[in-house]
Length: 353
Image (cartoon, rainbow, N blue to C red):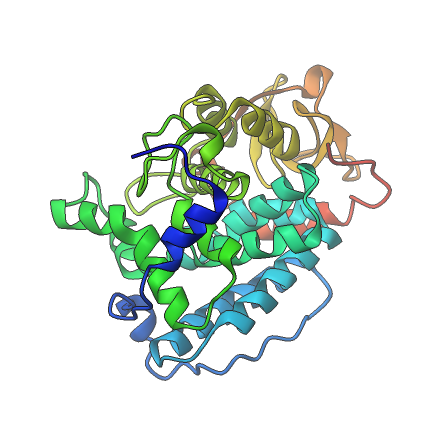
């Protein structure tokens, strides 16, 4: 495909996609049957985990109402604002949500995970609120046409069937058609959904754009999609260690993402993000509670200590040597309970990149 696409021309191409609800079908959601489609979201305030759980519940209700043909643009915009509010309140806890809430229910959780990463990445890149907002909306709805397929692939051990591969390749534009039918008109939102599987070297789809032809927002959502998918467990595998997922993304710089974006995400998320479990040089295990002044030196809470609980920087004998995959977590670990205990120790820290 000709790579000389300007933004107006891209918007023109995307603008010609017809509104179409025929591909909006998600048995996993529809099977809920009696679940209300009413949108009850009110900012609960309080702990960030509860705020993001409210986003999850209302995103589910939003997709159920979409099946009834109701417009969802205003609802999704409210949920995007709620994600932004949660990140502002405590970005480290919002990042930890990737690890505290994962597994079953992957399609909706993945959307929220991506929105958190996109929010932080867009902030780090200097994008203003008005520029971030459509990207968060896009992150929450990027896969609206393939929720059912995502749920099926969650348990799939091998490669998808040829028909499923075709649906995967088509889903960016199919999702745009669905969003248009559900009242979405924002060109930046639609563009980001349409292009989130494009890759910096031109190997992506649906248009095989490359380099500068690919808008930053779409590149950011694509990178968040890759990272969040890697660290999330599936029905057939454990979530990959966060440092491995970041390394793979960074090693793909120049191919999957551009070098500047890879560096931005490493600096923003860190090598050892909050919510991950790490092994220390002294062989102890610790929970990463907050990002530190360096990407390799977060604040941690050691899991088995006799003295009063406290956060310490990951350095010296407490230096991180590896991140544990979800399959390596200690038996009986209650990550959410451990996190809530550690979160109370964050007060007064100077955290973040």
